[in-house]
Image (cartoon, rainbow, N blue to C red):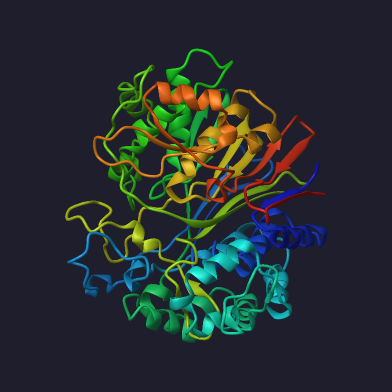
Length: 511
């Protein structure tokens, strides 16, 4: 059985391969891939952000689900936000306890096979020896120069006084030291002591030392739904992962034939369900049984208003965004990891942590400031999360590992990418390159506003326009419409991994 790794950066994929070659399993490789991704692409993820993972262990019939996302600080209400409609992306209140490092340790303690410090070796080496700056990283450090250039954590981004350009070599020695200490001492180095205090200081004491010390990752039950004879698994609220499964199930319930994909119906299924996202996606804590987002009755109720011939008007969700990295890993023993890790918006809050070489995410911007709303900014509560990894099984056997970045677009991108495979409608490669649509934002009582890549097809685009969708066509494939990373089982013995052509650094490897 082959091993496959797909990630948004070839250096991250290479790091995972080295771990597999050293005798590690998919869980070990996932940690190594994630660590390197945060080094070479800090505009996507890093140790200042959160993590979710679905872990498939060969011989089991369901994945383990890890929630390694953080909560708002005990003192977050001390922030003066009463005059604002939303939490600014660069405000200390947007920083929740970063969960990624705890997530690595929790995954490793439960399922890892190699020594933990070995898994961070490539990330540390790249920090010390340097790596070529990608186009996306160069654009990010140029865009955020004003807020980053005076911080120790980004000294090497502007070594000549100007942002490094694509192809120039970047070294991150401060982060190398931090990762080395995490490798030797584990998560206690991150959540206690001087580093934890530096995080507290960086948030102007909105996070406290107790908030850091008391943080733990949490194993939870994944959501599950049977769709077109396969079983989909994803993370529960406070994430929006349910929207992928619910949209695909709504499509199954709303169509009679699987021969041709009806784009209008799929879009309307998503819009009908997404309109209610912000009302039902929040931190349920111990009352997750109250969540009804994948109940068949709920899905049928939401899709009953769909007009098969014309775009409808649905109440709108609130606006949010994302800067995220998704990676899919399968080892030769049949274990797999669907892992997503994020800063939320690009490089996150752009708040650096002293001389430790990394930046804090701004996932707390997923809260709102509405009185009496269950997702209102509150101490020790987790915000609405856009991260939406998936794993799929077929008759109890691992079948697909699929995910993407894209903020609130993730369920949109995943539902339209996964549907052709559920229906066996197109080849894997054709579907990865096919144009995609996104709904960027729609306000109250507005029509469907679609942004579509040109390779979606002129005929299909005109048909959507004829059905009342307002369509804006891009001039090329969009990096923000992915990158989707995917691993598929072609048959009982054959697997394929696919990287997304939308991001030039993305790579799939097979060994």
